[in-house]
Image (cartoon, rainbow, N blue to C red; front, side):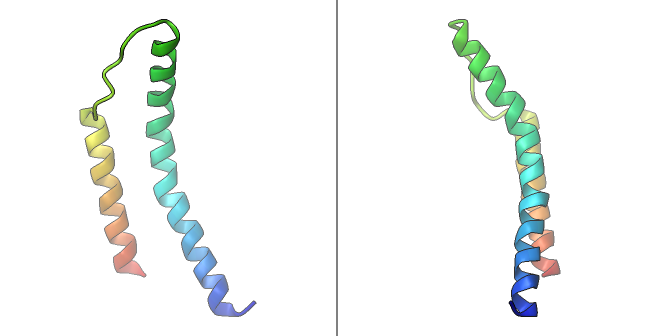
Amino acid sequence: MSRGSDSTVFRLMSWVCVLGTPIMLFALPTLLRIRAAKAVGLELDTGISKTGAWMIGGLFLMLIILIALY
């Protein structure tokens, strides 16, 4: 493997870590809440909450910063 491909793999993995971690931390409780509500027969509003909107905005900001750095 050449040195350039190592750099590409490192960049890809850093993007996955930086963007994937907040997504997982936000999505997991929400998905578990929806699953529990369905198990007891409740209907849950699945719209984007205020926290979700801030999380999405933060992720886009991190994406812009990462693109600017690379």
